[in-house]
Amino acid sequence: MRKQVLVFGLVGGVLITLLQWTEFHFLVLEHSVAIYGVLIAILFAGTGIWLGARLFAPRERIVEVAVPAASSPEPVADEAARERLGITPRELEVLRLVARGLSNREIGETLFVSENTVKTHCSRAFDKLGARRRTEAVKRSKELGLIG
Amino acid sequence: MRKQVLVFGLVGGVLITLLQWTEFHFLVLEHSVAIYGVLIAILFAGTGIWLGARLFAPRERIVEVAVPAASSPEPVADEAARERLGITPRELEVLRLVARGLSNREIGETLFVSENTVKTHCSRAFDKLGARRRTEAVKRSKELGLIG
DNA sequence: GCCAAAATCATACGAAAGAATGACGCGACG
DNA sequence: CGTCGCGTCATTCTTTCGTATGATTTTGGC
Image 1 (cartoon, rainbow over the protein chains, first blue to last red):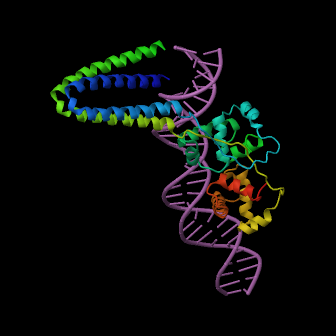
Image 2: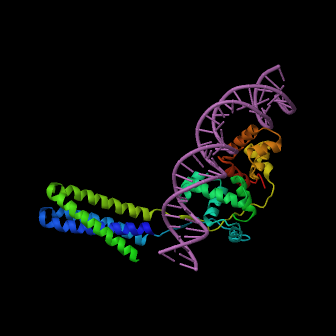
Image 3: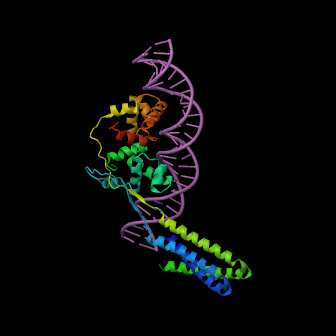
């Protein structure tokens, strides 16, 4: 939050400054009006992009990877076990990908986070599962019904 | 909120001061106004694009809607698949232990062979399974019904 | 606003894992 | 007898894992 406020203030300030600056020079260097026009256009284009992105960008797009479900017993019985073990949603997410045989690097690319972050999640999840290896973690997760 | 306004005003003031300073220099180097203008414009466009891109960034999250599967109804159909893939009995034995979450060392101790031997079996089995990691091998083995 | 839980990332280090290669013994089979 | 598949083992080297530690940022409640 703090950072955003700062950025916002900075951008705003710069904007004001730019406006005043151009205003002043319009009078002095009126022959370059076209140039300033272009500048302002670019400026506003940038601002537009910024505003547009900020206002319309979905903070988080949910991509559903649908698969032919054959929902047999319980589609989601995890939540309980997950909660009980203190495993966070993100950690569970990582666990699922681990179970799919992905490497830490690949998991990172899939979730758009760094490999280091994946490692952190893994370590914590393994700890909570009482597992020392990813293969063991996968086994325990399945036993506990955390993953399909 | 109050704090933000303060920061905003402060930054704005500082920038205005900066403006006056630059203004002075612009009078001296008025012929480079355009250059500065372009620089600032580029800077702004860059910032805008950067921010936009950053906010538009595919910050998606993989959500597993349903896990499926429809897994076949045969608990032990290994022999056939094993034969077909050219996986030797010993390799399969190792695979089972890998699926149990054991390390190569532990597998070696279990089967009374050296860790190196286990590695060899693993490598060959992984190759035959088209797997590059033990977790992947476990997944494939289960899919193929090689192991329970 | 402030706090706690989550999530993110980095750096460093030791421990596994995995690839590549070569080698040896053993039983089966032609 | 030779060779072929299988199991065994070693060595070297690169990559990946996993742990430890600390820091910053987000986020959700209160």
